[in-house]
Amino acid sequence: MTVIDSNTLADRIEDLLPQTQCTKCGYPACRPYAEAVARGEANYNQCPPGGAEGVARLASLLGKPVIPLNSANGIERPRPVAVIDEQVCIGCTLCMQACPVDAIVGAPKQMHTVIAELCTGCDLCVPPCPVDCIAMPPVTGEATGWDAWSPSQADAARERHNRREARLAREREAAEARAAARRAIGTAPAADAPDAAKASNVATTTANAAAPAAPAADDAEAKKRAIIQAALERARQKKEELAAKGQGPLNTERVSADVQAQIDAAEARRRRLGLAANDVNNADDANEADTPSTKH
Image (cartoon, rainbow, N blue to C red):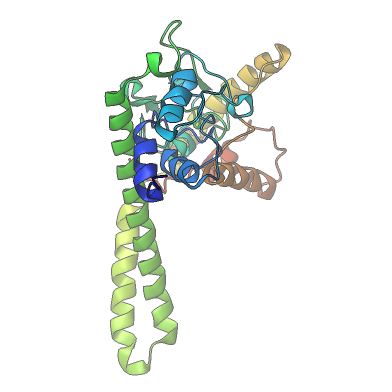
């Protein structure tokens, strides 16, 4: 019996995955799922975007029988694309932070837009949206699974995901370096204090350069609050309409730890402000939810 190296096998499995990075398989991205399958820790029928054909491809590679897609991970369906309701969006940036392939562009308190040709239909931008302004309409007709996707699209999505992960790693390292420089002020010997202070000043300057500028005047701030208040009021009305129809947010059961942490942080901000979990009719809450830590 030939033994296949698990790393090499993981590479071959990953090449057969659609690279939507949707986490429906139960893993944070396609690569960790491929590694788990290679180690025998996950089954090869847990990828809804790949559908039945995806299961068949993996079964052929692994020399195993073709089995049905595990319904616990989702269903095979036409590929959707995220669409943001511009009349409801409040520019909180949470959808941008959740998108695994940087397919959403925008700025804090500004309208966000989905680049349709880059969207993998992963659904991950839906749960963190505090005003439920993102829809996921299907765009491939009756085509599902690999009939609704292509190897070239998968390769492009994987490249964007890898670039995003590398960028986030650099940002984390930079943040840690700034924190270390600040700590050095209190721990460095007196002779080294000027150097520590200089490092801290550089870090502070860098952080300030990345931070959004403060409003130039009170009337500008008041205008921003009025715009946000109007958007939140529209969002409240839309939520009431959806509730009356028995509709609600999508994909709220299986989200990655990072996305869930963003949702939890938003709820914590609401509690800190003394707001109910479902109360979006407050401009201060929108300001608190403005966390442009991820650059696009």
